[in-house]
Length: 320
Ligand SMILES: C[S@@+](CC[C@H](N)C(=O)[O-])C[C@H]1O[C@@H](n2cnc3c(N)ncnc32)[C@H](O)[C@@H]1O
Figure 1 (cartoon, protein in one colour):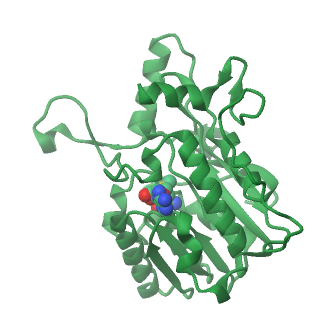
Figure 2: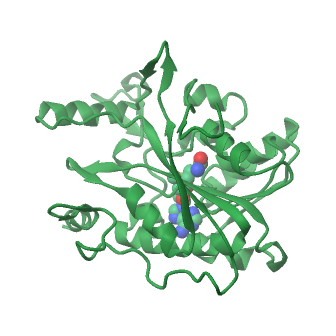
C-alpha cells in the first residue's frame, strides 16, 4: 500500500487474523475496536520511530499497541476502567513480545486530557489517532444458541458500558460538543505540523443516514485543526480485483431488513478517515473557532439534508 493512496487496503485479512496473538482475550468484548491495519497504516504514514502518538479514546488500546510495535511512544486515555485495564494488558503483552515503544494509559474523561499529561509533554505529539463512539446498530457478536439454550439469535458484546455519561450514550449534539473539546486538547498536545487522524462511519437510525463523518470534520475545524485529506480505509478485502465484504452479522441483518422493506441500502465496508494538521498549535495566530458544530440550523449543520438536519432529527426520535 502506498502512503499516497486515498483508499487504504486495510483488510487483506480479517480482524481476528490481524489481531493474531498480539491482543489479550479480554479485547474481544469491546464493541468497536479499530482494525489494527488502519492504525498501523496511519502511524507509519504520519509519524516516525521515536515519535509520540496519542489516542484520547483508546478503548482496548489498538492504536497504542500498533504504535509501540512500530517503535513509537504512546499515550492513551479511556473513560471506562474495564477497557483501560484491557489496554494496559495489551501493552504489557506487546512489551513481552519485544515492542520497543513505551505507552501509558490513563482512565479519565478525555475532555480533561491535558490535566493528566505533564506540561512538558504538551506540544510534543506527532500524531493523534482516534475514533469516537458511533452508532450501536452495527455492534455486537452473535452467541451460539447452543451455548445459551435460548431460541433465536443472542447478541453479546454490543455495549461499551452501562454508564450514561460515556459519550457512546449521549445525544449526537452532546457527542460533537465533547469531541470538539477533546480535539481542542489534542491540538495543544500536537507539535507544530502534527497530524490528527480520526476514523468514523455514517450509520442509520430507522433507515435514516446519520452523517457522522461530516459532523466530525466540522468538529475538527471548530477545534482549530486544518482538514488536510479525506481517505477511505477498507473493511473489505480485495481478491482478483473484487471486494470481499467482511460484514458483521448485525450489519448484514440491518441491510437485509432494510431491503425487505424496500430501502435499497448497501453494506458499508469502509471507515471514513479524516486527516487534519495542526499548523501553529499553542499560538494565538490560529485560534480555535469559538463555537463547536451544532445541529441547530439547516444552513450550518454539517449533516444537513434537503429536509433538514438528519443528526438532529434522529436525536429527537431517540429521545421520544
Ligand atoms: C470507538 S471506541 C475506540 C476503540 C479503540 N480505537 C480500540 O481499537 O479499542 C471509542 C471509545 O471511547 C470511549 N469513551 C467514551 N467517552 C469517553 C470520554 N469522555 N473520554 C475518553 N474515552 C471515552 C469509549 O468507552 C470507547 O472505548
